[in-house]
Length: 306
Image (cartoon, rainbow, N blue to C red; front, side, top):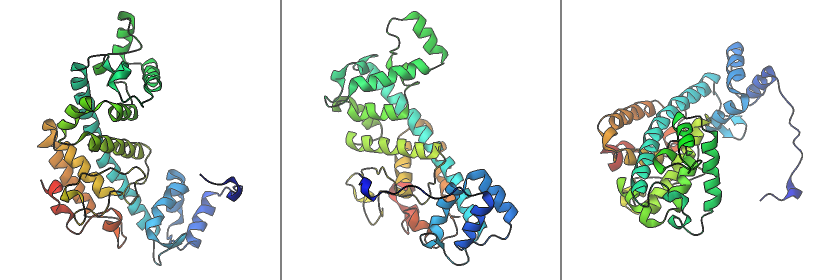
């Protein structure tokens, strides 16, 4: 926690778009077409744009000599497509994860087993979580929710297979994280993982989903929520450089999707091809692959090659 004695009052002034462009030029950015730059900055916000400058800096707020506005735009466009590709995979995994929980947990302990605190780790704030679910149901405008409300006394609680269509991904992650291990195991088996690994991976995927949904920079970001990795050799150096950047996330997404029969031989292969084609044309910085956590032979990684 920051010590209040070290803080200072924010004093940076508001800057017009023209002043923002001048500031970028003062930091070394080459801008040949100011009108084009003005349109771009006025559309995506200077602060977002400046995040894409980081990979081109030699030190904070000093850009490498020769860096152009168009190169920063290239990095931005690369990231936009990358986010779309990641979001496709996250969506496929989220839908599958919801379905397997609804099916497995619906059978045992039953349709409303999630309302029973004994199904969860005793340290879990079950009541608080349940209240959040009820709020999500109350806010829903889904027809099936309205019909259930007028027909059954359990409302605002819903059977687990209905609740899966309402529950936020973050609350779903909390649910799995805190289920008793006996309930976690059949779900983790779907993805050939240990429950503790799946718990960490789902938490990480929720984080990635939120970054994508908020159009945050992805390609060279150090993850704040890092996934725990299994002890197997292919999850360790030299096949993986770290667990805090893009490559490990790509492997996690690929590994989980490979365990979903409905998409394994169609969507996954197409997604993998598009990812490789896209990454083969990275932003114009010398260490682009390193920034994404890619090893020299990343395409030959056992999970990626499979």
